[in-house]
Every structure is written in structure tokens, then in C-alpha cells.
Length: 237
Image 1 (cartoon, rainbow, N blue to C red):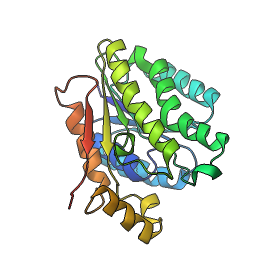
Image 2 (image 1 turned 45 degrees about the vertical axis):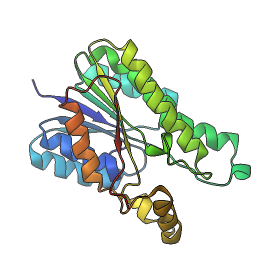
Image 3 (image 1 turned 135 degrees about the horizontal axis):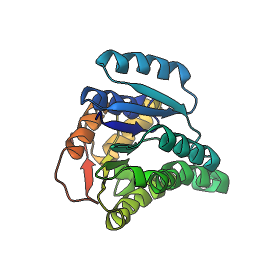
Image 4 (image 1 turned 90 degrees about the vertical axis):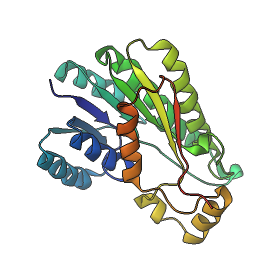
């Protein structure tokens, strides 16, 4: 039977590369997106040219009803999911005094609560499957004063991974924590600010998103203990 993987936020960046790498590894892909319909169409063509299936679902991770409807549709259509990659993330960086409770809640909802909900609603069709939570070194030791909500959400995702490893039977769960990754959103940042941040955390260059995707495959195929946290720091000075 063909293996099936769900990748959230797969229209571009890390999620796109993870979806492509899983497709090359023989998985049919279920990909979610929110606004990037044109990118999803291009990704569909690339994945299907590999020789596997690609199903896309528009999913607003800020909307719990949307999450419930997505999970119900998946369980109706597919008998088993072999891998779930919680990749979608939100960052709303700004000054401490300018942050609103609404912004803080949105970041937590997308980065922490929505992975929890997806796991809770899909685990019963994931026996012997693997869950990969894409966290960040910002949840460990590279946090900054501008992204305390993002860092808190990623630290929470790490701890959620460890806790669920104790709860989920016959499912392996991991967090992969990369440092700064070469994605579209990062390249759009102020280059001076990015340079300062890279120097601050001692990172020499951005991590290629393809390397994160390869790490996902390595972890899925590994015998790492469930609950393990895999850090990708990139090259350092």
C-alpha cells in the first residue's frame, strides 16, 4: 500500500521542500495551504511528475472549525496516514510594548495549538506512523526580544513533542529545530537586521531548506527514541 504524508504549509519554503522530498521517497502527499494557491498549483505539477499523488486542502489554522473539517475529510477519504509534518508557522515580530494579546494568541494558535489539534484528531489513523513537528532553535536558545511569542510557541511545541511521546502508542513523534533557514520570508527581511541576528547566534550562513527536508526523511527512517529533539544549527563561526 502506498505511504501517505500530510504536510502543513507546503506551498513554499521549508514545507514545499519537505513535500517534494517525501514525494521522492515514495509518499503520496496531502498538502495544506492558506493563501498561496498559485504556488500550490506549481507544486502539484512537480510532485505528480515524480509519479505520486498530490491532494491539496485550503486550511486556515487560526480556525478550529476549519481544522476539524479538514481532519474529518481526511479520515473519510484515507484509511491510514503514515506521516504528519506540522510545518506551518506564523511569526509577528515586533516590540514588547507593541504586541497585542490578539497577535500573541494568533502565533500560539498556528504554531502550537493547531499541531496539537491535528495530532489529537488524526492519531487514530496513524498506527505505526511518524509525526514531525518543525520547531526552531528559537524555542531553545536563539530567541530574541522581538519574537517572544514565536519563541514561546516553539518551546511549547518541543515540550508538546516530549509529552505526546509518553501518550501516543505505536506512533513515533519528533521535533526538528533548525536555526535560520533560507526561505522567501527570510530573504525579504532587512539584510542588516538579518546579518546582526546571524552574528548574534553565531550562524555563518542560512540553512538550505532542502537540508531540512532531507533531515525529515532521515528522522522518519531512523530508530531515534520517540520524543527526541533534533537540532539543526547550520554552519557556525
